Image 1 (tube, rainbow, N blue to C red):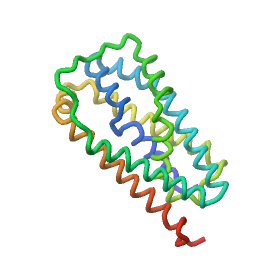
Image 2 (cartoon, rainbow, N blue to C red):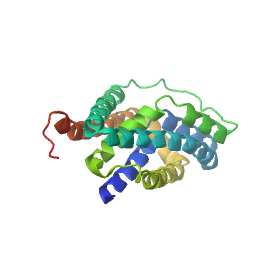
Image 3 (tube, one colour):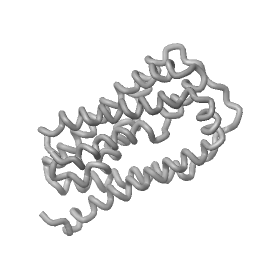
Length: 213
């Protein structure tokens, strides 16, 4: 197992949590209105969904690699286009209406659990993000490496959760986000498109026969 593979899995988990999306915006609203403790409970619940979707994504990626490099490259190509699609959507997102009231959540942990497990985009986003960041080390992927990759991914999720929990209660952060929400969302879209370019960069040579055995 290579260091680049472990680092890629860690970064994939980290960015999967940190890149703004529905859960990120929900966390920001809870943290802004109810403080860090409520935000931490939300993230603890959401972590269950993160682990489920990342586990399924890694199993799919390793399984595709075991079947053959062509399948893995095809998966990478599809994920690259998917990342480009959601990135383009974020770049062109319209600003939300001003003056929306913060929603008070009575059970943040349960909200996070339901939010994470039932998120319909959880699996495809995890699959696309992990594929983009571990594709360069495809040769080291096998089912024996899966437990270690899951542990490294868990560390990435926890690190991202700690980062978010540490900042969501700050008034300056809350005001900054409200003032620059459009820029933050569009920047995340650019990052997704960067991941898409990386996935396509690794997948295309194998599909057209340029990759060396």
